[in-house]
Image (cartoon, rainbow, N blue to C red; front, side, top):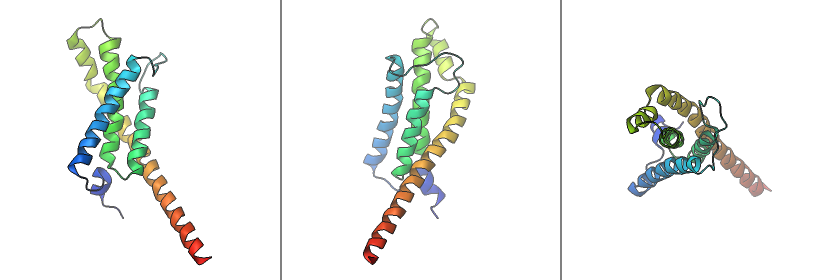
Length: 152
């Protein structure tokens, strides 16, 4: 059984690895913002509760974090950073006719952040579990094949 602390924060890492995690999260945030700003990621109208491209990016990050046995908190932060990148694009570029105060009010709207936070917890946990269990399954299969080959 893996201790809860290890699941949440991952294996003990060096200061360099923690800094790298922060840089990756900031890259996800700015990369998602840039992709929406440049039109690489599209929003296809209607009421947007969860942006599809940001959700996919964050989900894949969570899968990767789970597969490398990183912490669940890092998986959540990666997904949330993608969502904030989307909201920053929407606030500062999509609402450009609003005042800067209004743009910041939209970006940090508690209701919107709560929706994204709940989605982050659910989707990030599922992505992390897919990566973690996927890697565990591959490792077990590899061990089984190796032990079977040694018996042959």
